[in-house]
Length: 198
Image (tube, rainbow, N blue to C red; front, side, top):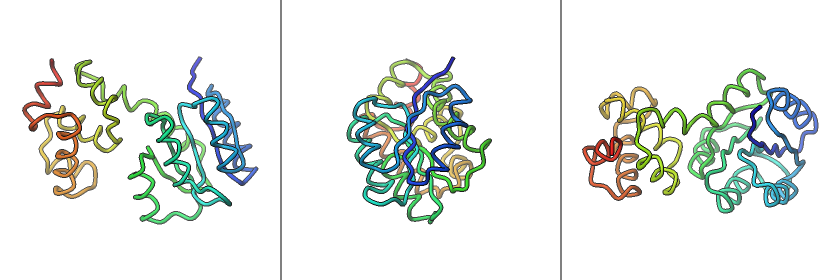
């Protein structure tokens, strides 16, 4: 019925088995790999819609895998999974284009919700936004956070309200908006709103 394809890369066989089963039961098409090199070979052949990769593995780690995959197919959803979670690792993963980051042992319901949320990102953003803007957003490979900021701007929120909603500073919101305007080649909020209804 579904379904998007997901590649799980983890050197723990128990994680590969249980997560693969959880996602397959939800209707996703799942492949697994026990290290980064094997995972990238899989990905080059299949170009999966999502990759869930362990952060700490022998050989290529999750950050390196995210970088490689974004180079091959920029719109791939990436979730970094780790038992060694630190804030800096999370920030680095998100900066490189990861859609999400969470710790193991994972909770099945949380996993399924996070995967579903990642896949529905465009759909959530798309509500009430013109095809012109959506196409530009995809073409320019905006980050997940930039898409979240745009969605909140479309909902009429101020910079301060966006900061509260996303748990970031107002300066960070302004930086995201600056990058959004640069990527979309527009001159500010008014042009963004105009583009959204064109």
